Image (cartoon, rainbow, N blue to C red; front, side):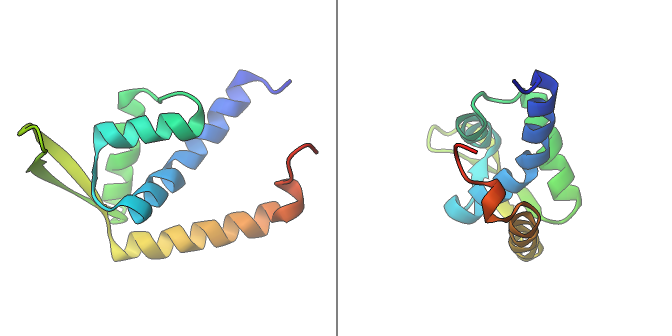
Length: 110
């Protein structure tokens, strides 16, 4: 059985890609919703601090852009949008992951 630490490291490494993927698929999203969706994909929701660290890092790299807006409830929330550089990075990361992992390593049941 894989040690918990190894799985945690894998999840953390995938978070940036998953965030970019969520923004490509859904358009602008606020941080809470991103955290919930990360939890669905990773099996458990990461800590808020972890999510916002990833969002800040992606924003600093110019891959996403955050802006404040009122949500449907009227509450002020920070929404994140993927930038063009983020779209390019998303495609490159997916291409590299496919190259590195290959289809054979991703087969279920092996």
